[in-house]
Length: 292
Length: 346
Image 1 (tube, each protein chain N blue to C red):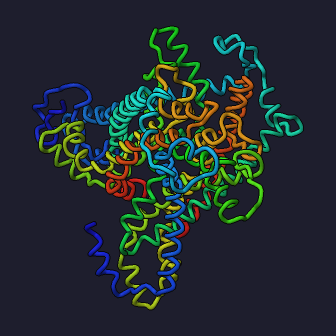
Image 2 (image 1 turned 180 degrees about the vertical axis):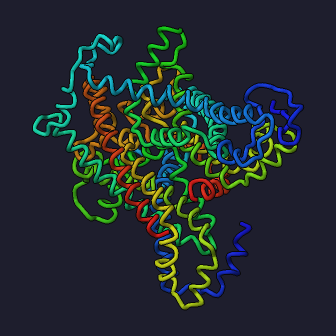
Image 3 (image 1 turned 120 degrees about the horizontal axis):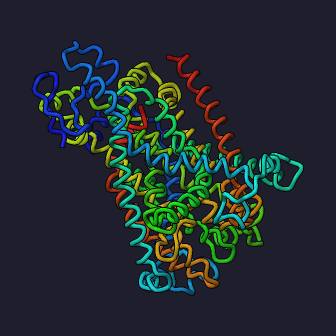
């Protein structure tokens, strides 16, 4: 981390008293345990044979096995759900971020009638309970399918459209904050260089806003990948996503907990890895976006 | 696209392309443009400046209309209908219910109203606990991680994992830990610590509320920590140094500098945490399934159950509308109170 040395030297006149260090040590240890235990349960149980997860819990598996990682694909058509989730989440993210960039640019750089109404409406949809839209949206999708032949209910397209709007309010809000921190002189210079407003946005402002854009991408992908409510109503056997598919291990009479844990781990890897790799951008994006 | 020539440098030669690449001064359509000395093409330019932001916003507006605004209006219309399972495919044919759905929902002497009120109280308690605990843990962790020490980066990364995990994966793991017979929690408190002789149930009965709060806090507090961490980095370092020179101890620095500086961050953070948890569906749904135990009957699950288990969409919609009104009032009051406090400070 580049700022460690700067911080370290700036901090040296302020020595931390021993009492504070102990409170910090204890507090952080407890929090680390709280965080780690479920993660440990997930990892260790995914490497247990079936008899270890039936009956009393074991901290250490009697034998370590990677069998569950092979079995998960046949107990439930996990690969199929995985691909569905990938298609839906990637498409929703790409479309949502593109839309958000343009909307945020308009809100950040222009003052126009309706600007406030738009911001307030979009932001307030973020606070609405998903349950409010669920049934009307279901009816609207069915009706669109009946009248135009575009199948939205039970299709990936319907889910993509729904998910991309879920992350839209936060993405726009975040990007507005981010773009506001980029000096307007930058756009003006781009205009002088012979760009139109779209060119100025895409060639000059957008590259400068990349940390914000990446943050929004990660957020949108996570939102789509983790959504449960609409996935449970709006999908059928062919389009089911992981959010619903993962519960199929536990709806059977005999719950294969080792397989449930292995599957949970496998489906978490794309988001957790992406999130942790990009956390530097994410924190930077939050600093200039959410926190002003 | 967007190869238009800037009008300010060459007002005459200006090949017109599509509307979206009309050159407007990006510095601002309205007030800023007025400050520019008006030239020949000013009228046209102003028109372009005015229309440009709307083109940028158009896709966002369309999707917002399709997925949020129109369904909300349809939902409000549905709340005045007697929309049971017979009318799902043809909801226009459903008989009007007038205000009956609302009357039942707010009548606390009736069964529907009483259970809705009960669910609302549970949800408020749940939200207050989860927001309070998550905010406290997140703030504490962020402040502890402010000064560098060995292992700080590792802890920061570890603390983000629960937030990054998909809701269903995290909650399924917790539901395994909370199993009565083969879960970790009972193994620890009964077999290892011998705190009780009988294995308690965690996913039904009185303990289910505690279990739900615990899982929600585990999922929520890392986000609070992340936001507060970001907020801490915008506090100027010289404030701390000045305080240190004045002889302020570390606790005083936290109380006098850190906490007041975090107030604007906290205003947004607490609101976001409140709305997320109040509307949370994934945690109770994955933990308990479509019908939660009454002790942990959160409002979103309650409405879901009313709509999809009892097949009464009219009543479910009326409850959703009431929930929306409640959230609007609470949010408006919160913003009014906190913003007024901040303005008085400034």
